[in-house]
Image: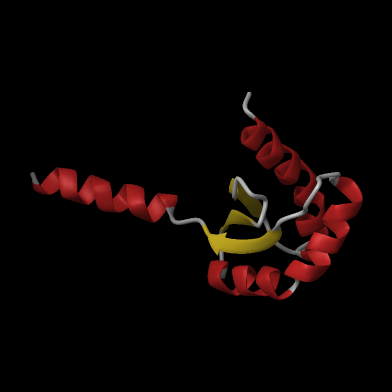
Length: 103
């Protein structure tokens, strides 16, 4: 496993309980973690059954707190800034299916 994959896995494992504590009333999943090679940013895609945009906005508003808690759990030379995004893979898959049906 390469270094970036290990860092992404480590961040995903450490950040999951933090997010679950903040959004205890929701069912939410981290679908993808992508950290830049220079460790400047970490883009985290989340999937929720309802109010996905609202949850992403809430998580982004709490990004500094989440990063602070993450720094206690993950020991890296430089901890990246956290940015949350709505997972769009299901929408992209639907669009591809639609395009394939049109062919």
